[in-house]
Image (cartoon, rainbow, N blue to C red; front, side, top):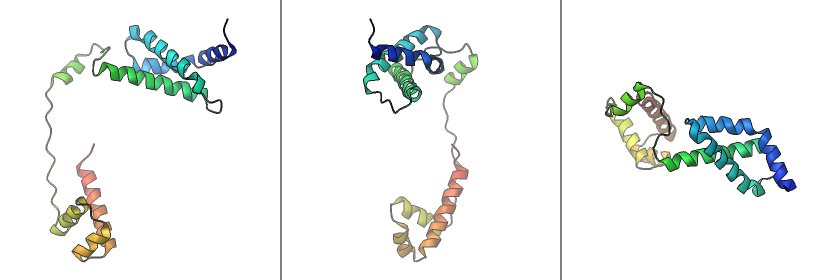
Length: 156
């Protein structure tokens, strides 16, 4: 005989089963491991169910538990890939050695370089304005332009 609490939990899980399966399918590509992950999610949810607050959305709560459980499982694997699609492209990407492309040199006028170096040293704009003997606002504008130029040069 199930308690009312258990019946309520089963009812809520049944109504949000599709959400759990979406997360399981997203994080676990190998079909044989999906049921295990689903069971892990339900076990963790049941264990945490006493801490579930009624004012919170169950959909959000179970989704968060499902994502965290899936991510924890992936972390335990530490790089072991459960399933790789049979694409030779993927294997060729792995086999290629990584070579870092050098960034083009950035040339700044001496005053910009000095301002930038002082910011890197941790000085505030007011301190830099005292050292360089320029208005603080001009230093702010200069740093804004330097940051803009750097972000154009270095694209992530």
